[in-house]
Length: 485
Ligand code: GLN
Image (cartoon, rainbow, N blue to C red; front, side, top):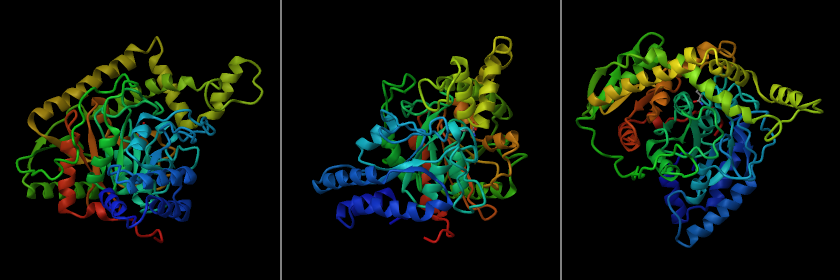
């Protein structure tokens, strides 16, 4: 059952081969048996899952419901879930029970999904390896000595290990695509504004975007269909119609123009990853696509720009965690200032503190123009690079990450080398564009990702392009073998 797609599971549920309760129990058993070695879940909600499955079974028996009715999934622990703990990977929110559901959660519930639990993540989504979580690192199911990527590492690892058929994730600078690449799954970061941010704990509001993490592009289309759409509770939500994401999945690619940015294939890219990406591009040539070299000349400025903009926004967003309104409160505060200081000192981990310090500095009166304003200007230049490129090509392709999963602890003491893990993903967030990572051929015996970037609201095109490769190759079907299935 665990290797089946959402479409197959939905057909089996309808045929009565098994019930949603049986399917849910099956995945809960796998989590119980296999997650101790991975740590991909922070909270498993067996009781809630089984009662949601019962409700789904009643709907199915009545001949009602849609493709997602009764399908179990997992949510990244950044999405508020009513009555279920939402930690955001932090000690700060260790005991936080949200009084409401995030819009993503509400919409998926309305579509009939069953929530198996909340997945582990870097603290407040800050990281590229899942090592900053207060709940311990997540291990990559392909090699448990290595990281799964971050910050949606728990979602990526649980889908890769087939502990859930699909999961939600969020991507501020690469956090859906990079862990998808390192774990050998499909991860889609939609256009900024496509999916509501309401109830998604904010990291950097002008960059954050939620999306699906699945074993195939076809499944991502189904999940995105339920997640996407205008939400009046998110002021940056796009009031644009949601197309049928599954309708054009098999469209022919003859004449598709693929741009390969020369800046994505230079220094710093692992040779084996480069080879996998080239192999995938050769497949696209066979499918009738035309490949054109392009340039995104401001690529080298993406990481420094992001590390001004994202910390600036996070320093402001995270000021709400003050020991009064939410989360951790220190013992016996002497006065208000002591309450703020100690609650925050105790509740946040090192990476979060580093970002708050950088962001506060960048926004301070004396440095605002030199750093924040400058970064915003460069952000425009980065967007313009893509605008120019999309005059010439339909999609842009390259590696998702510069290398494959590295060893746990290897980069923990070197934030700059960690930050470079997102060198190919960050510009997409700065521009607000959609991007998808799909498995390419393994590199160094580990998963490697092909990234496909599209123009604004071109999710359907990205899913089509991704699905055609998955029709022609089996890269996405490989699952880690060493877990004692
Ligand atoms: N790795 C990047 C960071 O640490 C991106 C994280 C994300 O996309 N949430 O900020």
